[in-house]
Length: 490
Image (cartoon, rainbow, N blue to C red; front, side):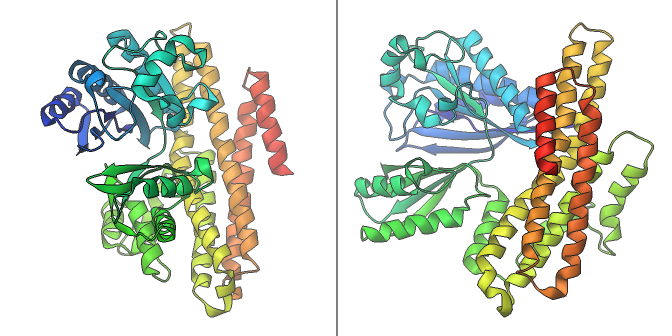
């Protein structure tokens, strides 16, 4: 199965093109593609986006850190953006055929290798964090290079995850982690007063009472005040909502947004959300976009001559005399279809006058069902892959003493995947139930079908959980899963 991982390293150099070119060249190895590079002279920082299979991208990231440590001297570095390392932060993002847990493993491998090869201490953050207070990058980077250089020597809480309690003399320390796709989004204000930008940033960021999944700070960039933000989950907090929040806060100080910028790349879905938000298109769906429809047709996901061809390949795969895809994948697919039916009913009801009073509830249901639908679709492949991992572990056990541990790890994965499917299906079922009294009665039959499918998905997924539980040796893990099953059934 092919794997695709994105890596978005941030280096503390945004003015010297030759240095950035050298770093990019160091990361150009077989199996890795360069998607984007951004240089910002005010922040004195560059953001590189690469993508590749898990093995190649691991080595590419390590080489990029090594080259940065040769060419960037933090003792001479000045810039608006906080930094603690020549290679400041190295996040890994799952794209295809990998999970966030896989990216955590990559991050830990990269962190260990950075210390071994270059003697640069490494901290792990976000999903890879080993301490709760290190999930947020701001906590790790507090004091920046100059402050951390002294604090790391005397404060046990600042001890790195890899390496000694001492910064590299010129390259500082590097932060490595795993996370979801992040949008680096900045809004320029029509004022030079950076204090206003800082006040708006404080209002918008979650840590000080603002929007969930938003981090923010105020800077002076290109002679203007800038609200600099990271959106860590754009599906939960859309970019359009963030822009409107900043706009409202700016009005309090008699200023307004002048322009905005995206640093690096942005998921297409985020722009689709913004289009729906600002244009207020009735019954908007991503399949209405020409390029999306063409992609679906050309990839075989949709047939010009009918719907059957779109689902037939998966049905035939289920019918084939092979172990995967099996019941777990089918349960995830059925739950995704239930979520899709619920979305259709909510979207069509939302535009009818008789149901306008329920618009907030319907919009919230649509947003959550869309996310669940995507996660459940991903679960189709994840379930099949978890089975493949079990088979691979049993094969390893025939030739290696590590086989038994590998089997246990794989079995835990094969148990956790359908457990997640069951929980997501339960949430779909709950949302479907809530829609019955606030949507058009003409579509009641669609909700009935959706409820039945969600229920079937729960039963099917839990059957896969139960059959794996008996094979686990970790009694504590098995008991935790049984407890979750019990809560779900109640």
